Amino acid sequence: MVGGFVYAVIAFFALGFFAVPSGFHGWLPAALGYLPGLLLITMGLGMGRWPIAIAWAVGAALLLGAWAYRQSAPIHERIEAVAANVSTPPGWTTIDDGSWTGSTWGLFGSWPEVTYTYATPDAPQVATDSYTARLEDDGWEQQPPPDASPSSSPGVIAETWTKGRWTVEVHVAGSHSRPREFDTVVPDALTRVDLYFDGQG
Image 1 (cartoon, helix red, strand yellow):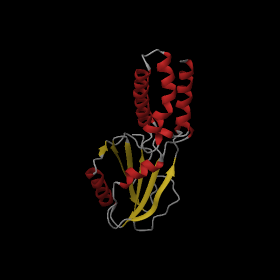
Image 2 (tube, helix red, strand yellow):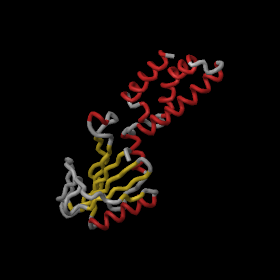
Image 3 (spheres, one colour):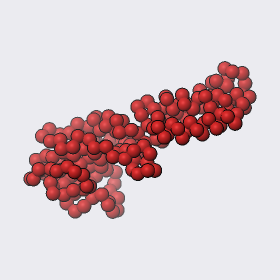
Image 4 (cartoon, helix red, strand yellow):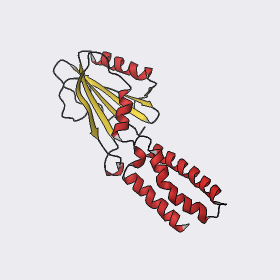
């Protein structure tokens, strides 16, 4: 039983270190990773015969795998898949088709985030309304603005939308306003749109 606990602790840190629960369907490999230790624990606790002990261990492994999948920061590819479900309005020009920042090891920096930058001839408010209408159609909900938003600046329209665990910050500004520092340049006389997607909502 002690060996099972030791294994479970090691598995918890190892799976998190290698971002196993963070991937697509990460609950399954996470559950499989927890299973051997849980089998040792259930047998050590004398929880009936082998079939009963196995059933308890499998059930606990699935629950732990699902919990780890929900708590872990999703990998960038999962964030990209969510962002791809929301199409951009016609006439938008792609400037940055998805910059990756952060990592699943959030304690070493920031959590995974994917940034998209577009340019559009639309006025800032028109660009904001056209994109957020698509978010709303896809089931996203707008969040009330914070009292003070350090990520926004004068002349920038900044909105936050969420859908389950997913969050997107929509920043819309003239070409010379830069909500955050990125090495992307929007042509003069066009409106800049920055979309910051993450899965830590």
